[in-house]
Structures are given as C-alpha cells and as structure tokens.
Amino acid sequence: MKTTLDELQAFVAVVDMGSITAASEVLGLTISATSRSLGRLEEKLQTTLLRRTTRRLELTEEGSTFLQHARAILASVDEAEEQMAARRLHPAGRLRVDASTPFMLHVLVPLLDGFRTRYPKVELELNSNEGIVDLIEKRTDVAFRIGALKDSTLHARPVGTSRLRVLASPAYLERHGSPADPGRLGHHTLLGFTQPETLNDWPLRDADGDILRIRPTIASSSGETLRQMALAGLGIVCLSDFMTGDDRRQARLVPLFPGQTLDMRQAINAVYYRNTALASRITAFVDHVVDALGKRPFDE
Image 1: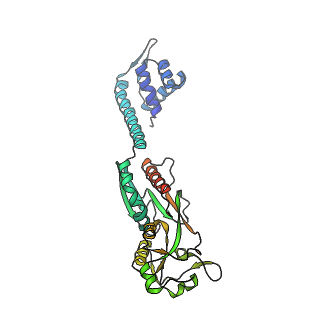
Image 2 (image 1 turned 45 degrees about the vertical axis):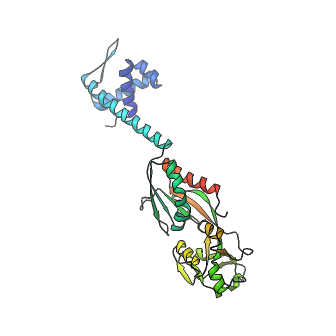
Image 3 (image 1 turned 120 degrees about the vertical axis):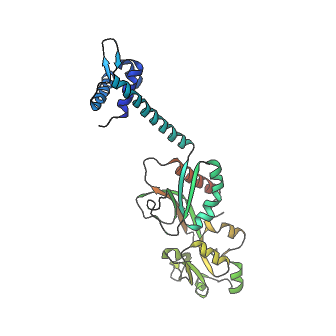
C-alpha cells in the first residue's frame, strides 16, 4: 500500500473546506481529480473515510483517526522542506573537503576564517591526500584537484589555473651558482616528484626543443616536502605558483630562466559526484574559494 502526499493533501483539504468542490479550488485541481484522489486513498486503506450526503461530508470514526496522522505527516513534510530551504539560505552540516597538502595549506587554510565567519553552521572536515582519492570511499563532499581530470563520473568546476616556475633559494645559488641556461641543470641537484612522471616536466625546452623532463636527484610524493627542501637550499625545484607566492614575493625562492620559461599552467578544479541538486554547503564553499582567488590570482 503506497499512499501519496497528493492523496493526503486532497483528503485534508476536503475535510477543512467541507466539500470536494471547495477543496478542488484550493488545490488547483478539477473536481473529478480531487474525487479520484480521495477514492484511491480509501481504496488503499480499505476503509471509508468520509460519508457523503446530499448536503455535506462527514468523517467516519476511521476517517477522524486517520486525519490526525495525515495532518502530522503533512506537517512533517512541510517542516522538512522549510529546513531544506533554510539550509539553502543558511548552509549547515558537515562538509568534508579533500586536497593535496600544498593546496590545503597555501590556498584553503587562509580562506577558512572568512568562510567560517560567513557560514558558522557548516562543520568543516579537512583531509589532505597527495594522490587521487575515491570520493565515495573517503566520504568526501568536494575535492580540489590539480592537473588534468580523468574520472568522467565527476562533475568539475574550474577554480583557476596556476603557472609553473623553476625556483631555487638564494642560499643554494650562492653555494652552487645559478645555471646559465637549462642545459646546465644536469650539473645541479634537482628536486622532483616520485609520481606521476608528468610532474617532472619543467616549463623549459631541452636541446631538441621539447618540454624538458628532468630526472630528480631527490624525489618526493609531496609538493610541500619539495618546497621545504628548496627553502632549505637543497636543490632546484619546479613548483606551482599557488604554493610559492609568498616565497617569491619575499625572495625566499628566486625564479630561474625568466626569459626562457614557458607559460605552462596546471588546471585546478573542484570536483564532486554528479547530483541533481548540490548541497548548499558545497556550493557555498566552492563559491567562496573561487571568489577569493578571483580577487588575488596565484601569479600576483
């Protein structure tokens, strides 16, 4: 037995208005449609809810009992809808966010205070993973991914792009000298990624005119680890602007080969599984990130 909300609404409206005709006007239905809804409900319940006389409709004892339940159900649905509407206007609930450690530390964390001030009812849970995680397995609402996307089951919203630069600390350059051209990089300590290999494609041309792919002297899976090693003067590194802005502005890391560096950029996307209606807390967070980054691009 599957009673529908439309049937409950028709029943309650008939009782409240005192007639099928008046109830039909309130519901915006034809008299026959309202009558059919009432008939289906009684058939499903296998009982008579209303006695029809020539002058009026009277509740049966069963109808009186069922009316209380019907009102409670409809009130509960109204309350649920009101709460959902309120959450759209005032996002609330737990929001699980995943991002690589560098993006989490250098981009998202500085934006959290403003987001929490604006949306105090959203409970944030932040997770950092250097690799790609399964959003469902990790119960993640939204993830920020750097580079090309491969998972077609995900919906992606572009957040921006971030330029790659070859960098070294003044301390390293003082000890080892600054390479005069990209061909001299083989004489230096190069800091690179363990995987994927494409992260070791630097925005420079090799002797054959192709994109330069380096072989790291020291490798790590974490961009933040590579950044810290570069700051410590351990070698030359290629990192994305989103994680080195302050370092470059304060000359803790110095760009190399500015005239020969290609404009290679990493795409940054917010990804989440496709839904017919996206939770407002996800939309609010992604909007906040996009708006903030639009006001201060990574390459400034």
